[in-house]
Amino acid sequence: MATVSYTRMADMTEADLKLLEADAAADARELPGRLMDAVAQLERFQGADKVTRLEHSLQSATRAHRAGKDKEYVAATLLHDIGDTLAPHSHGEMVAAVLRPFVSERVCWIVQKHALFQAYYYAHLMGEDRNARDKYIDHPFYDDCVEFCEHFDQNCFDPDYDSLPLEFFRPIVEEVFRRPRNAADDLEFVAP
Ligand SMILES: [Fe+2]
Ligand SMILES: [Fe+2]
Image: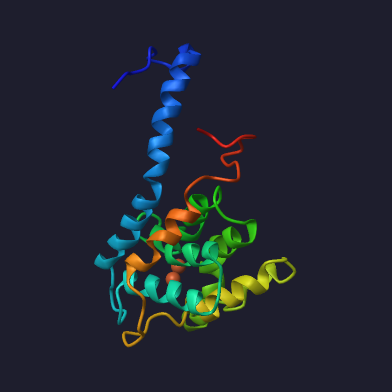
């Protein structure tokens, strides 16, 4: 494969950029597959829960699909905990960063804030404020995040639920993550 002419980006030429863009396009086509792999790897994580993190994610996405949510919402629901392994203390932020170029601001915000909103179900058991999420009570997506946690997250630890298999969601993930529609990283354009 042809390689660029530079060793520091300050020396990059337009020809170099074209080479990079071709490679980035190929790389982008593989993104949905890498995201599916990230979901599959959640199989290794269970802890004391009755289901693995993978089963939890499948249950979340299945419930969202059966509730009639659109593909973007279902894909985000499937992916909402893939940050657990690398960002256990900020996984919502991490997954929101993955989603941001591809989904609506609303769906991105739901995933970004879901850990705080989900704490409603257990924070009081630790002597903490279960209503800490109410600092966002006037936010336009507050009710959406409450709904996500109530119907598609806190209730998805049931070993007897008939979740759809991971492969059912592959075409949905492929469609949603086919091409970015929003710029990110403070850029004015969608990066190659
Ligand atoms: Fe989570
Ligand atoms: Fe979750």
